[in-house]
Image (cartoon, rainbow, N blue to C red; front, side, top):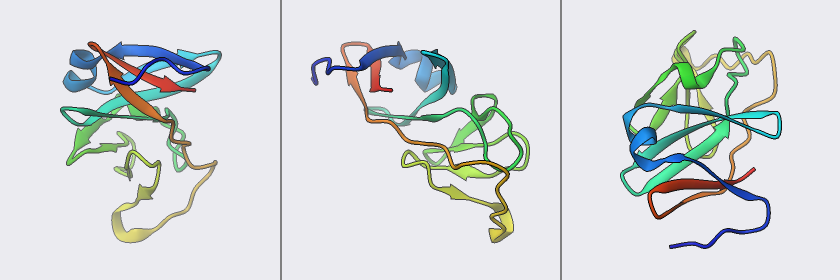
Amino acid sequence: MKQALPGSRALCTVSAALEAPQRVVCDGRAVVVWMVENDHPAVIDDRCPHGNARLSDGYVLYGRIVCPLHMWTFGADGRPHAPGGRMEAAGPMPQPYESWISGDEVWARI
């Protein structure tokens, strides 16, 4: 179990992140939290660079979060994959954040 680090905070419960992607706002920055595997969380900025949609309104498929607007997918590292391979982004790619589980909560350094 990793201890709290400077700048880290609890974002949501593990059970909530397992159920569906969670939108969390930390100091004005919106992030999305989901579980890649039962014991590994992912946290990235909650904004698709292609259509500006909230990734937290999407769903998780094979450990990747799927944007609800145009089906771009993002891994825990923030790297996208676009249907058909077209990568025309209107904004910056989502930033990934170091995350871990402590007790029954997902923590991250935002």
